Length: 128
Figure (cartoon, rainbow, N blue to C red):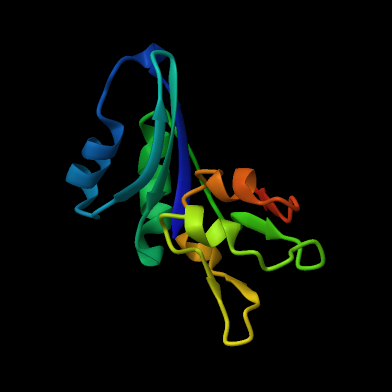
């Protein structure tokens, strides 16, 4: 399950993710991170059975963590199945079915936004 973790660096540069991994023993896959001098947002993937534990520990360390249930809004009526999103996506979120219709595998998305920028018909929107 994916969690979006946000934190402020005003409290210092404590290694929140490393601390949670060490304390819980649960391996965390960091899929995307945007961190600057004042704040950060990290998209992590954790085993579903450990999601509540990880969320609680992140929050105890001063971060906020929320499950990411949806990533992409796909407007099938606006899509012309051009494949622009397929070529730009490094996570293999998009593919064609045997009839050359676009297939979206949302669970692979890391919210990079490249597909949204590449779509000439604006058929894709990120749900952040």
